[in-house]
Amino acid sequence: MREVDFSGSNMRGTRLFGAQAIGAKFVGADLTGASLEAGNFEGADFTNAVLETATVQAASFKGAVLTGSDWTDVLLRKDQQLELCANKTAAGTNAKTGVDTRESLLCP
Image (cartoon, rainbow, N blue to C red; front, side, top):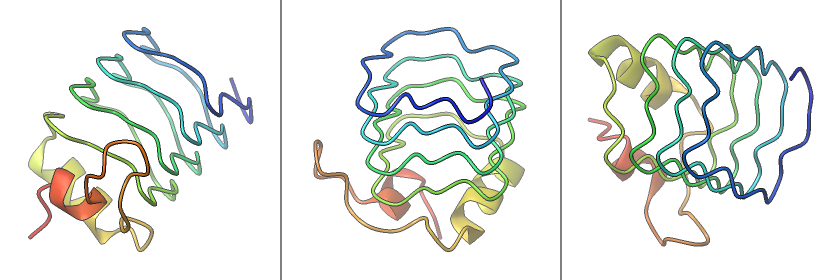
């Protein structure tokens, strides 16, 4: 799944367990309830993606673009939350849900 473009896709409930989605594009994708567990999403673009209730344990989002993404009710380990909140692109408001990215990540 490296550099695959899923932009605008309806991926609700999709199982991406262990996916190697380095540099993939999920711009505006609906990943509500998706399983991203143990996946590598390094450098992936989640601009305006909706990840409500997604499962992300042990997933890596190093260098991912998070602008306008909605992480409402996503259970994050504390270290994952801190890493995502430290990402400079964790900003903006989701165009579809109107939810603030940092607020949905529960950033301090």
